[in-house]
Image (cartoon, rainbow, N blue to C red; front, side, top):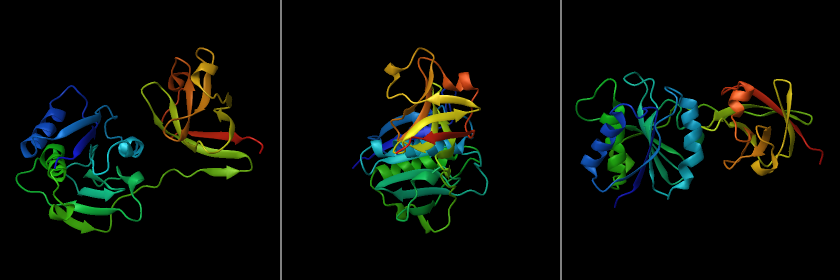
Length: 250
């Protein structure tokens, strides 16, 4: 047995960190298939990492091990954990990075760490080896003890006032698209961002060059985009900024 391992981090590509983690995985399971999600998460940005995990984990076969190392509290009080949820396994720090995949059936285990541990590189010393053991079919309860308390922050809540919806920017992708927390099943007529009205398009092909518009994103949330340009740059936007939309008349 050899389950797929995905790997998400804020390590970047300049240093040896990603390679070192993969090397430790291969020592334990040299048949591992390790798929890089990205290592370009902004340093220490746990909430963006949580959004990404929610966005991609179901694209993989059930049983996949999702290794996530965005760990600003490495060496501190936060626990190393395995999460069993939605028929997948997740390995990483208990700092909220798995907040959006928890449900009532999730099981969380504190990893039992063995050997000499660095105070600064638990990705190599704990998380990578744990992911490798899970990929070989080792049960989570053989690798740690079940816990009931863990860190979880709530998905940003929408607020409604008549036909207006108040939300926020959850994530900004490489193209400068602003991904909101407003689900695509709502009939949005337009967005208002910093007093600027932004219309809705059904596709990029409908928009003029450099036009800023709202569109239903592939991840299930409305996005604010710019045709062949960056909405982030044009609107001077950042993650966490408020945004509101007006619903269409039914």
